[in-house]
Image 1 (cartoon, rainbow, N blue to C red):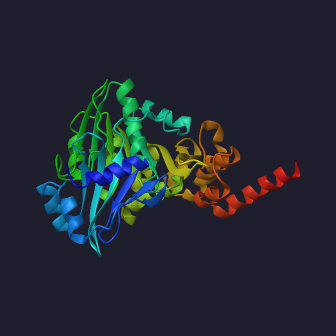
Image 2 (cartoon, rainbow, N blue to C red; image 1 turned 90 degrees about the vertical axis):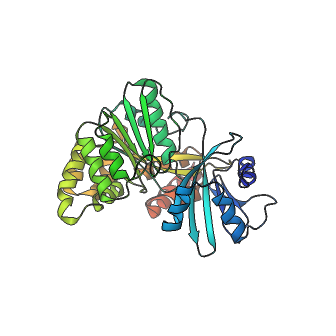
Length: 362
């Protein structure tokens, strides 16, 4: 039993999602979006923290940490109580880490309480799909649920490229190949180039991090492969802008043209605390690239995307703020949460004030 396991047990008792270990501080857990101290846990010293983390790392991972001062690790306690993605890094106080709990059971799209139109994605036969949101918004879980839906109902070859591998997919109707950077592939570029020769129908890359990866994802989607990936953006417009920004100014026009022809959907999400409950619910911005939206992406008119999504509500699309406002109107979230997570905060405040004035007049 690794010494860190006692802290992971404390995380489980609190039903938390993340464990933070930092030298000079007591361990903390993220519970329903808030950081709280583990009960009765004491401050961890610099040497102790380093030893705890080195105990769960391989020689290769230790060498990478020594070289880069950070490394991603997958860790499973021997008692089988869970699986964790571990981000190990160094700060001014020494070696530190954040453990993210990976559910052992892969969720269904329905169980995640996402907008039901997200269930269209597993039916796509090709193209590029972004699942986006800030860190901790459940992007990886949503991706896993999409992969699981394809695996359950289709006959395809799915290739995932991850750092590290998180959810473990067993073959159902699909054949699933999961590759981890460092252990199974040298780089995203090498793994993607290899996937293109492996008769892949679906390629999942856990995050776009550089222009080489971005270009290869476009090329794969252009050949009819369904490509799934993530970015840390909270609107469809910002997703398009962020992706195009990977390319040099000289290449951006061509990248926009390719993106406009291959992009199928952008699903943005945030997890918002439910009122009077220790749970969070996903708010989504959803864009399917149809009609005028395709031209906006091609021509770089991203400032018009939000309005076009709002106008296409009948086709299953929604803006992030509309999703948040609907939760507030249904009584699921509080007014301060609605404003805090809104994209256009002043506009959200006015909407809430208008509703409150109407209720007062009744």
